[in-house]
Length: 241
Image (cartoon, rainbow, N blue to C red; front, side, top):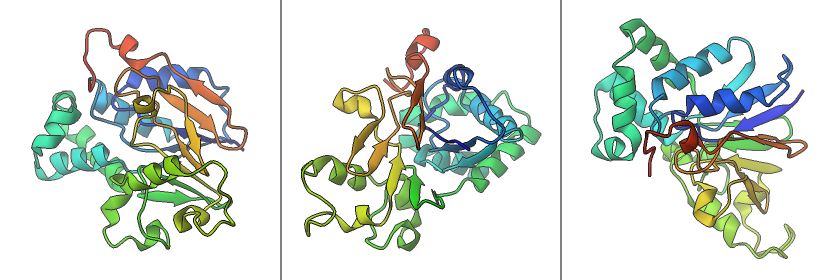
């Protein structure tokens, strides 16, 4: 069984459809989506509909992202957060106008069933953003931090490559897990368009909301599959530029 991790999609339905075509899909594959399914390109609602249908055929784990949380708040409670609108929410809001009330109910259930993080049998953590508690994400006082935190990634990036786990300066948070897979902070900010690894942290957000591609990684072999740069699939749109 392969464990395949998918980075932030941000409404790029054409990108997830394209990159999945590059895989030889197997019924034994496990797909772990790292969140932020919406807010960016115009296919936000269509992306969630696709994921719901995809999960009927394949084993999927859907991690909750901050954009998914804000979209859920809008759909469930009519909470129109101005920052959400400015950072992709306006496009998502427009995409939901096309859905029936029955379809929206299915989407609400999808968002509700997303999990804040997943730890597999090999002690690998999958989380949208990170965590701050030295005992792990399950002990966070503010549970929403797991889809907002950037300090875990910043910490991993700042480590001297020569520091080993035995060194007293090695961060306790990183010692908790064999590997940690995150999205949330696009690696395009540091000039990369492929998943980036520091210490035992792997960032799979390759900037699909902006000028980068959507990426899938096999966590065992580290083989990577990518879509075209997503903005090329939506040439008449701005995304989150």
